[in-house]
Length: 130
Ligand code: C2G
Image 1: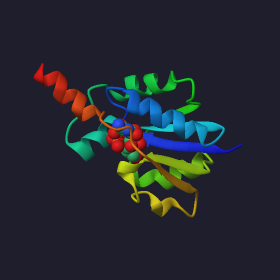
Image 2 (image 1 turned 30 degrees about the vertical axis):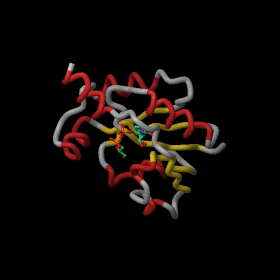
Image 3 (image 1 turned 90 degrees about the horizontal axis):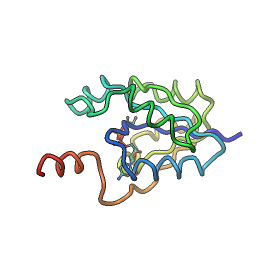
Image 4 (image 1 turned 180 degrees about the vertical axis):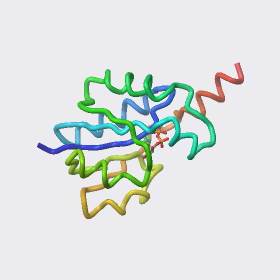
């Protein structure tokens, strides 16, 4: 069985998120999703997500093409997560291109094109301006 793993915050869930999860699942037989913790987000972006990690995990778990969900506590633990879940392929959007190539001895790494014209940041800006 080919296990695919992907990571993300998936805050203010939108169609770009659906698209990457759907395409990631199509790369194998089983999809595991690491949802970034609230603290990991704070450390990266200096703000907490709009939806907390428990709600984001609940939303991702409800997707029919997602088989397993866990919380990603640190970007540096990628290799541990990949090995623990026996993933054979890591899929990320191409805004991360090259950033996770260092796990390559452990598994294949694939960067898929992002869905254009939509992002959590843009949605937040639009809502703020209304
Ligand atoms: N994405 C996409 N198209 C968009 C927006 C996002 O394909 N229009 C993809 C991203 O490339 C990523 C996934 O959706 O693969 C999740 O995006 P984010 O929630 O923005 O995740 P991020 O904050 O980049 O966290 O360990 C990795 C990080 O935790 C990823």
